[in-house]
Length: 427
Image (cartoon, rainbow, N blue to C red; front, side):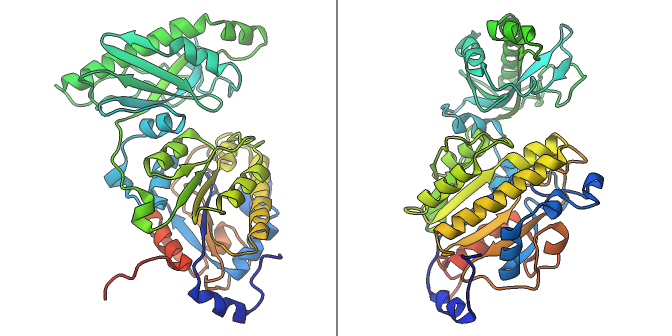
C-alpha cells in the first residue's frame, strides 16, 4: 500500500520524531471458528489487504482488554484500554450512556442505560430490542421525560436505535439496586430491590425505579407510535427496561495524564460518555449508525480531519459487535472489510505518518451471540514500530506476534512510547 514504510533508512530516520496515534477499536472484533466460514473466524475469512499488509510491517499479538478469560463490556473494555483499571474506576454503565447522549448527571443522581423493549400483558419480555426500533424513539422518550415519582424527577432520553438512558434526580438516592432488565427474551421483567439490606437510599431508589418501569409500560403501550407499529406488523416498543446503575465517576483527565490532545470519534453514547468524562473532544459523525450500514468512509474522514489539531484519536466502529450479537457471520465479515478500507483511507491521507493500534474491546463470537473471554488480536503499526514475522492479521496469526499477550492497561503506554511522547520512568 502507498502508506507503507519504504526502507529501513526511512524507518531509522523516523525514530527521533513524534507522531500522532490512532487507537482504533473494532467493537466485538474477536471471534471463534465459524462452521459456515470453513472453520475460520470472520476476521480470518474477511478480505483485509490493508490489515494484512500492516501486520507484515508491524507487530501483532493478543489483547485481554481486562484480563485473561474475563467477559468484559464495551465500557469496562474501553476504560482498561485507555489505561483506567475498571476494578478501581468503573462506576456502572449508566453515567457513561447518559452523558454520551447529552444528559447531565449531577452529584447524587442515579443513571441507567435503557432499552426500548417489547413485553406482553404478563410482563414477559418478547424482544429486548423492540425489533431494533429506529424510528419514533424521540416521541416515545418525550412521553416519559420529566415524570415525577415521589420527590424524584425521571429524566429520559433516546439514544441510537433501541437504546436510551434514564437519570433519577432527587435527594437521598442509593446506588445499591438490582436490575429490572432480565437480559433475555421469554422471561418476565424483574422487580428491582436494594442489594444492601437496610440502606434506605437504595430502598427508595428501587421503589422509584419499579414505579417508573410500570408507568413506562402504561404510557408507551398506548402511545401512537406503538399503535402505528402494531398496524405495520412491527414489535411495539412498549416498555423501558433500565440496567447498569451508576453514579457520576471521578476519573483523572486523559490529556494531562499523557501529555496529548485527544479526540473521541465513536458511534455509541456509552463510549462518547466515557470520552466526555475523560475530557476528550467528542466528535459526532453524520452517517454513523452504530450498525452494519454505518458510513465508515465518513468516520475515516472525521479521523483525518481530527488529526489536523489532535495527536491522539480514539475511534470505535460498532458493527462487528452488532453482527456478533445477531449471529450474523456474513455481516461481521462485511463490516470488517469496510473497516479495512477505512484504515487504508486514513493512512493514505496522512502518508503513513501515524502510529496505529487496531484491536477489539472484547470478543463477540457469532456462534455464541454475546461477549466472551477470548483475547482479541492486536496490531501496532507505524514509523517507529518494530516488525515481527507475522504476515496476516487474524486471531491465530496474531498469536505468534512479537507483542505477545498483553492487557488493556498496557496499550496506551505502548502507544505513547511509539509516539515519542512518553516521559522516561526513573533517572
